[in-house]
Image 1 (cartoon, helix red, strand yellow):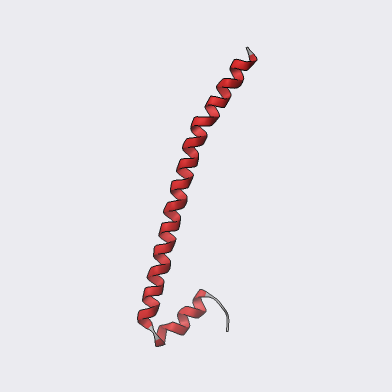
Image 2 (spheres, helix red, strand yellow):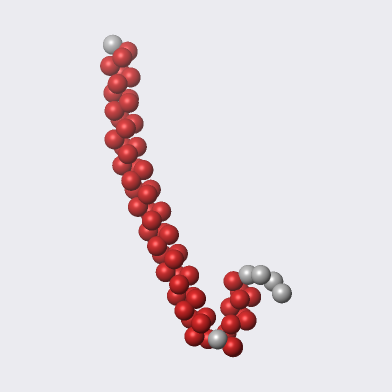
Length: 65
């Protein structure tokens, strides 16, 4: 038997529909948390880059003079 999410869903669908529903909910919730965490980390990285890169550019211009 193939080891995949689809195979597990097919195996549980008839025998344990309530377990399948809980597993799908847990999977979806985990994906949402992961996506929100990634978005937050990306935003933080962007803010850090915005603060650091212009400061470094200004320092290089002052060093040239």
